[in-house]
Amino acid sequence: MPYLYYPFEPEPLLYSYSALEPYIDTETMRVHHSRLLQGYVDHLNETLANSPELQRQSITQLLKDPMTLPNDLRQSIINYGGGVYNHNFFFASLKPGSEENAPSGYLAQAIEQRFGSFDDFQKIFKDMAMDVFGSGWLWLVKNHNGRLYLVQTANQDSPISQGWQPLIGIDLWEHAYFLQYLNLREEYIDNWFKVIDWERADKMYRTY
Ligand code: MN3
Image (cartoon, rainbow, N blue to C red; front, side, top):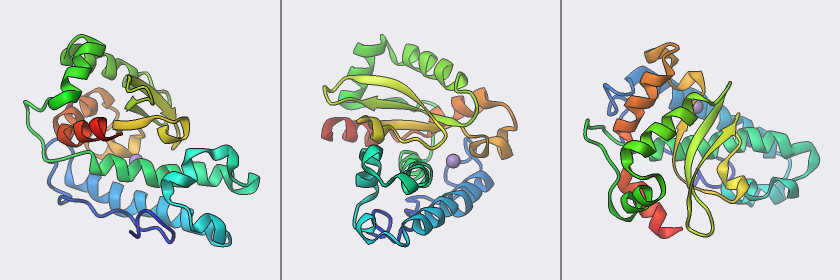
């Protein structure tokens, strides 16, 4: 599994760069996956180049408890390892879109119980995503008790470092939308909702 262990490679997309049109455009996907994710992968490999013990750990093991990492490598692993994990998760959590896209299965019920309705969930999610200042992410996560939360993370900090299992997560760095939407983050969020793979999110909700 070259994308789970050193030397890391970007996880291949399960769809083409153009598959998320018109919601996320081809060029954004190409740059985001083939250049930006590749950059995080290269930097992570460089960071681990002289650390055989760390090379044996999977990406989730590396990020699970950053305080256990060596002081001199910790922040690089948080930044680049987080960049690798978060982006692989992000790309795998999307699929060709539809206007009626909505949660399904047990997760749909859990979202209704927790947030009132899918509409209410979307409103809260969007407010919190608009509220992320600078570069960061917003995630729907499940904690160890099975409860759903919306959590913001800064930079490339990963929710798994807090013990959260992400179900969906939106990349709010400008590189994720600027080519297509310029500074219109709100429009990007609305359209990103159309390409979420809710079946995958439900499977993760049931599995973890
Ligand atoms: Mn990104």
